[in-house]
Every structure is written in structure tokens, then in C-alpha cells.
Image (cartoon, rainbow, N blue to C red; front, side):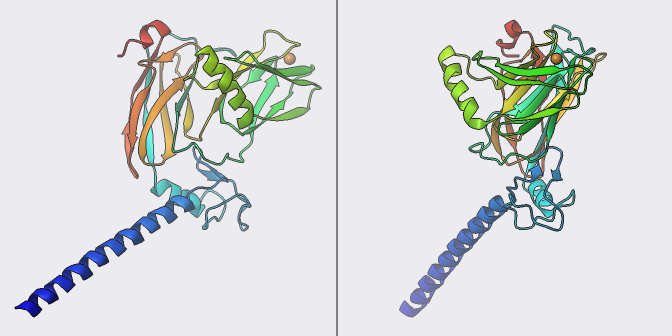
Length: 297
Ligand SMILES: [Cu+2]
């Protein structure tokens, strides 16, 4: 009897030990998967791997990087993440969607994903100057992104920025037709602004640079600076006054979703969203005038 009990105890110990070693192994595997899906060469929203094919991108930390649109890093990122999608409608107002300074652009973004420690895509972002207009009128970028400012006009142009919240300015200079200047919207530069912004009590909105030209005062555009690559730009249709948005390849988790628009605010100012791997979370949004937005809808 005693020996039977002894054998039973041994069996229980072996089973428990086996279970724990399996847990440790699967945790290690999960850790490895999480590590292998971070790739600075991947543009999370356009789903392109910008690493050079045949040769592993220098910045790429994904072990399976093959470059191009069928890159195994992208497949791994897709499998381990979810999608946030939905409609955007406008409450109790209308916006002008035509013309060079229209109100059609809405930026939808996640405020914080993990520690917002995602490498910046090496994809080139451009803002053109043509016919005395900045094109596009609004761009949203991850902090650290390099933007090329082109002059495609027959006239000289200048580019300077005003931080929407702090009022701090930066002049990039004036250049000739056919020329361009690159500007990297640095993280550290914006952290300085955060301090000023916190003081002013205007925190909670993304840093936005108003882009202006000293030679043509009617020219204006916006650069919305975000902390991670999980954002998208939606365009409001003039007739329906509605838009659709999709944020792809979001790691599983619970997040705060926000919007940026030149005039309108998200109803309730923010929304909570839960993302699961391999699934779609549908969150329909309403944007409206500031006075209605604060009342939760
Ligand atoms: Cu100009």
C-alpha cells in the first residue's frame, strides 16, 4: 500500500514538473515570436517590406526577412496581430471636402501601443508644393520619419513650421523650383514640446506642425506627429459626409483610440478598443464640434 502511494506521488511530481516545463517552453516561444515580428523595414499600414530583396535589411531584426511584399516578416506580423476598422460620421455639422484646404482628412490613431517602441519605417514621405499649394494638405507620420519637401512650382518657396500647441517655430529655408529639402521630425525635438504642452495644459492631442511658406501667406498644411505606426488617414466623402478607416497589424491588447481633425473632435474625445490576434474589431466613430464632443455620445 505504502509503495503504491509512493509511486502515485512520484507520478504527480513528474506530471506537475512536465506541465511547468511546457509552460516555460511556450512562454519562451511566445517571447521569440514577439521579438521576431519587429522589423524597422516594414511599413505596418501599407504592408510592404522595404528591405532590399535577396539581402537582409541592415535594420531588420526579423530573422526571416526576405524583402518585398511577400516578405516572411509581414506574414509573421499579420498572423500575430489584429485589425481595427469602422466608419467615421459627422454629428450635427458638415465639412467642406473640396479644394486645397478642405476639411476631409481625419487621422485615426492609437495613443500608446506597448511602450511605443516601434522602429520607424524607412518609407519616404513627401510633401509637394505645386500651384502655390502644399500637397497633400495633411500628412500623419510616426515621429522620427524623414519627410521630403519638394518645390514643383515655377516660383521659389519657403517651408517653416509652427508647433500648433507650443507656438515654437522652425524655418527650413527657401529654395528654387525643382529642388527639395529633407526634414526628420525628431522624437527628442518633440519631447521638448511635450514639456511646454503639459505646462499649457493642452496635453492629450498629438503634436501637430502647421506648415507655412513665408513667400506665399495663403499656403498652409499640417504634419501630425504620432508615437507609433498604428494610425491611418481617412477621407470624408463630400456627399455622404462619411469615411471608412482601417488600422492594420495591431498587436493584441487594449488601447485608447483617438482622432485628429483640423476642426472636429471625436465624440467622447477617446474610445477604448480591444484587439485580438487574427480578428477584426469594429469601432464606428463620430466626430463633431468641440462643444458636443465632450458630452459622451
Ligand atoms: Cu511658397
